[in-house]
Length: 293
Image (tube, rainbow, N blue to C red; front, side, top):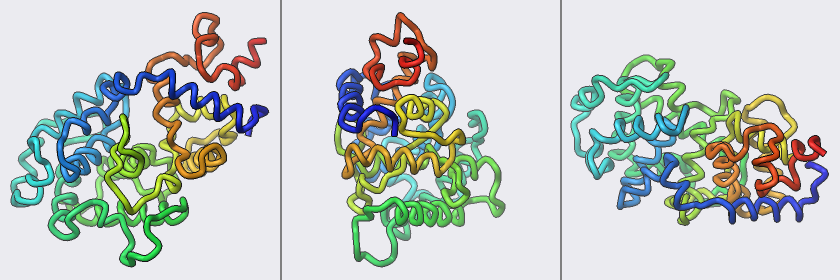
């Protein structure tokens, strides 16, 4: 870790949560769209769509998520369970969002629909066949089940070939990448329910979660001494989760949302700024602030 002691770092991160207007930030975050759905079954489906598309600028990705979910109506779980598979390819004829095309959403919807008919929920698809030792509490077991979850969904896609766009939409942790959006989905499912996360799954404990790491959050984690790796990959995401677990073993990702929104809100601009840094809740533990002295 950094020179900042774990108790001091924990206090700084708690202050970061306290300084973050969670309700306001939720409504500017992809998860805010998921909260608009009323039932657990519908939220689970909306969450996988929303997290999978949660890349790029937030002012662009939220409209893309709404456009992707719109054809499924207010009850996407019922719609996908009851709609004939041959009707799904007609739902997104003109959808384009960066690397994602309508055909990728058809693959995702087809996979989810098949899962709802067979296992009845995405959580049931994620869980191991044996019901012993649940919930999953360790990161190694979680990564194994996360990879199995993705593999099964990919096999249930609409198109016979695994296209690049669908691989990007639904990445496999076994490939070693950070899989930020997939781990974001699992955070939403496991943590809570609170102002942000949904707490829909009983079979995955928050202690097993992996940090949803991207370029921006990895920088913040380096500033705080939570990360040394330069690559933003699975090892880096696991390292951050392990170090946050020193601060809160049962719920290490409780700090993720507030840290992420330091970057999204542009409160942190990744360099010393005399107008911004003194107002930042993590300044006392940040290496950028140290270098400015």
